[in-house]
Image (cartoon, rainbow, N blue to C red):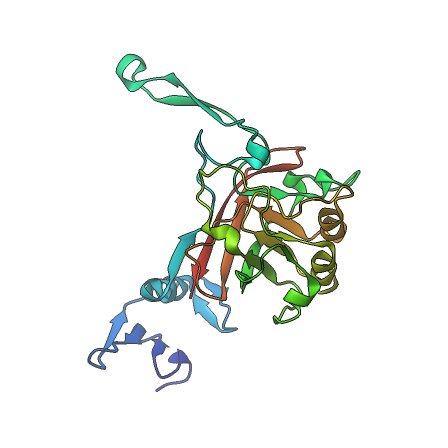
Length: 272
């Protein structure tokens, strides 16, 4: 091969400027190539300079290896709400049959379903949701399987796991077995003060839990305040029942609403 003809190669995947991108079939060992244009260059995570086309085809080639799981709580009028407050209203204001269009008036609490808690939720002059940088809500994550915990997650429970700086941590507990329309369970598994202090000491960037609150029975709200004081953002109301992996890629997109403490979010987990 001429210099620079192959700029990325291993046993399964190659990219050649002459032939394009290729991936070896597991079935018969043949290699299929996709013709590419020599378009503008970008830096790919592998650290190589490659074309945007290569990046596209590389991602396309992994589609069969990736599983996208929506871990958001479905919003309906009969959904579980915190302490059964029943704020969700989905009122049809226009109908296709009579108005030639379908429109809905939505009313709900800011802490409905899957939602982000910003520092402003408990801290004076804390950042509001619109001030949270999305990069804090996107990235590799670790799913901690804690279904054996019966009441609360403590520092001792968390010490068993490998937790690093800037991790996104998702706490899967027996809460995940609850139906999304079941009555509110006041005895949900939560993260206690010691658990929050442990995560804060690890300087993670985000933590999520599989119920509508991350704490309970804390008059001083120590769990929230410990995490939010270090700008560790909190995701409540995740649906982790169908998550079996321990790692993945996490994406959380809060609604872009100015000057509020919390808002519903769409969250996905990509299993690799």
